[in-house]
Image 1 (spheres, rainbow, N blue to C red):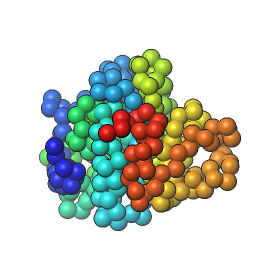
Image 2: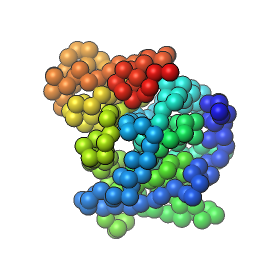
Image 3: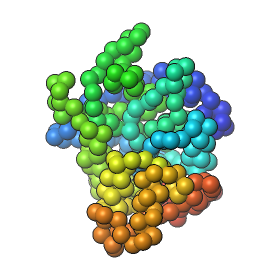
Image 4: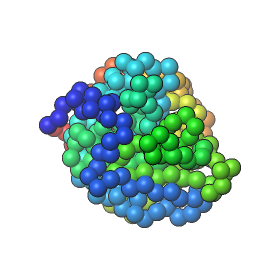
Length: 272
């Protein structure tokens, strides 16, 4: 099987390569319309009917730390056969290689594990553009859709260039998808893993805990994730009922085995 370091190296060097044979399905929906059935159905083709949202960010992290983050997840999620999804963007370095972000984790895990499906959602926060040699970009900074996903869903307010959403504009859609998979798709477990992150990540954690789903919080990853961990230990997270704090699962950045063990305990992974 491909080793994690080799897969990460291949990922970094091929920023525009589409992983999936037959291409990545690319859909656009209005924020107030029904969730697209075809996108939801892609999630049901997994080996194990479990779903994890990968949340967070990489602000203030060095390039080496980001590579370490990818290796952390590759180790913790070895053998994962469920659905992984995250934001659907990809950032590039000045030299044109992939800038490792949280949004690279689902595609990387799908590269390493058969029957894992990687999906991405994102709000349209700027005007879609064609740039360079006919490459689709998502904003004036050159952010591109992540081609390492099996499917991508763009959520927009409307077709006008002025109808832009904030970065939390896809939360209702992705939580709606998770609810559908769990309530109607035969999925047995759903939750999220949080690493670092800012204000939107806090909304994601609160949304997860409020629904009674486990939120795996990687301690030591900094920013909002560590802030929420501190609040959990103090017994109060704004927007979350006290009874739901039990769904916050604290794991260690220094030991991917702690995340792996927690995922096994909560039914997302099978013990090897």
